[in-house]
Length: 243
Image (cartoon, rainbow, N blue to C red; front, side, top):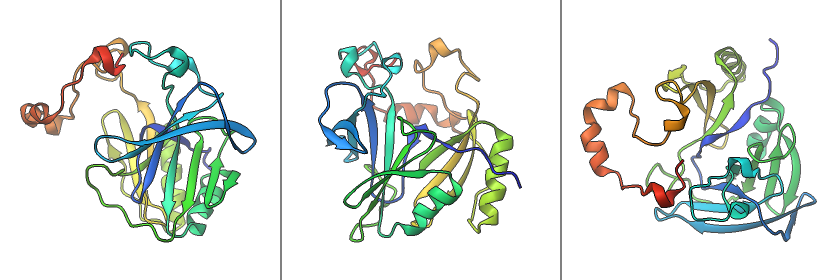
């Protein structure tokens, strides 16, 4: 079977089963060195206890930064930089990344190994941390659920489904998520991976200029809209950076 083209990391949701860190990219001064490129990061926990990082990188594109928030454009968040997988043992996970998913090693700092594909710019990076004493995560507030990888269309997704099935992974059937189609499987360390298609896309039911203005629900959740909206916190679009 022909090899599928490389996957790309998915900005839609980077989530995993063990301890993980979602990293957002920003652009300002630099200091720390990793893989011969200057980077600086700020690590913090959100109100639910999820660890996040703001990472300075010269590859941050201000064209993707929000102009709505009260943050100078040179300091604005420009998208997802990378995701971190925390593993009790990492060899088989690394084999999956490098031998099947077409990643390659681009750097190492102590027990952190950085992998990338098609260059090492934002959205193409995953870090694997070897942490033998780490505690397995649970699906709850403050945890990350899965890592999503994007693929260009349904045909390419079917190639990934066949290839991963042939390697013995237990994959879900293709699931219709309205805005994209998904398959799921657990990598050797137990982290849940998703491969999601780019189409149909988020403009399937509203124009691009209206994205983010209203809560969109799949048909099977529409009967519960009132209960769902009542449980959600309010968002002030003037300060949230929603555009």
